[in-house]
Image (tube, rainbow, N blue to C red; front, side, top):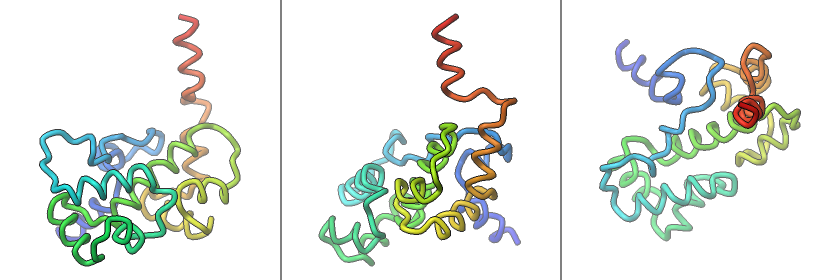
Length: 163
């Protein structure tokens, strides 16, 4: 039972673990490159950089391994040992983070476009992955974050400009 809870916690983004509130914007602590004091091997640093910069264009870990010119098992083994998360799960977390940002922008961007911008070729699969990681469908997430009770980022920016 305890392993099951740890597994569920591992699949959630940090902002979900810190608070189960549905109305929070995504937390930037998911970026491994921002963690200080981590002495990652160069392969892992390069993988992190590629994932964080090219998440929308990576077709998966096979593509990442090919770009790094290493075998997929070597990449997975080295990355997981150093970072404590598999490169596939990290890629998914980064994609979901960026999807949350897009969905919280307040625009009515079609789900196909949001999915494509985050590296998913199919809106249905994107919705399935998004719900697995956040507990909400993309539409539910957008509605909860853009609720009128919570000011949008644009509203907060305007408030700062006029204060």
